[in-house]
Length: 415
Image 1 (cartoon, rainbow, N blue to C red):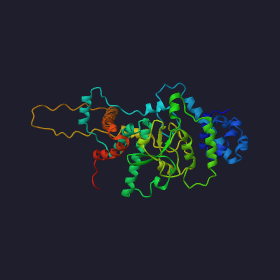
Image 2 (image 1 turned 180 degrees about the vertical axis):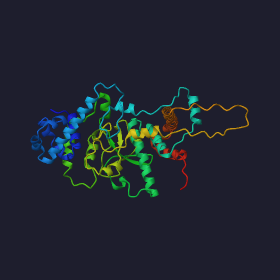
Image 3 (image 1 turned 90 degrees about the vertical axis):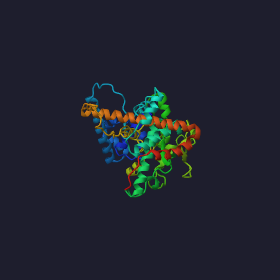
Image 4 (image 1 turned 45 degrees about the vertical axis):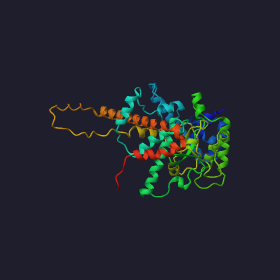
């Protein structure tokens, strides 16, 4: 009997083979009985056998062709890397189809830290630090550290995803206000309707909950839903196909969100505003979340169900990728060029110019400098939020954070 993992892999393959999701789900049991649960077995199956299951010659040939292509690719990749050197697991952005355990994911997303072995020296260094950046990465840095205090149960991957969403939504709103872009934002067109909402620094962010994150963290193995959840999910998603729904609204995604509502108060209500929560309302009972990328969802114009996953995968719904936010932070905080004027009145000879570095060495030095600057900024923000969280509480801290950001953000020239 096929395991839940094999069923998930089979559904991912059928989706890659352009088989409609409802049809794929309805054929899972027949494929399991025929022992056709992976691309390798499907590639070796005779066409009449596939035709008997799918009853569509064109679709059967399409599945067979895709299975042979996927199997050939896997065989080729395994033969070209016989004994690869062990490498540290790297985080793969969403869409790459790879999965990491939550522990490996969080480790891969770790941000640089500031050395605070000597508090006085650290604060003195922070006070004299000057960073060269723009507004967008500063917003991301603010939100990442803010959520560390207002939503302490959320791991770094979730905080980065939410921070990227807040920044992107702000940029989209600004572009629309300035006339750089036309049309309505995706959330105004009701994309993602019915998904839970979190309020973060004044932005209403649609989210998808990462069911199984802590289970996978405890077992240190690939998280898959229980067999009961899998069968219920297949049944619900299949029945949703025949429902009368509004265009562009993914009812199956709402069922995914509600799958474990008995253990949490965050369910999909009849009142469209009733599912909106403040970030400070999140508790340790709440699972980690992904921020949904509604603009990407609109561009894909997909009616496929949004599949909740503890880690980003190609089958998950369009989310704001935490890896993107991390990369953006690492390269966005430079040190401004020194503006100290040289003097000609002193008799002291000027210091010799520094030795010219190679291009690779110069890039490595610049990268290290930017990471150190980011570490300083994150530490300073951590000090700020930690000093206020117990005084005004998480909700008021979230409200004031945007005002603090507005005071220190880079000023833009008119026009």
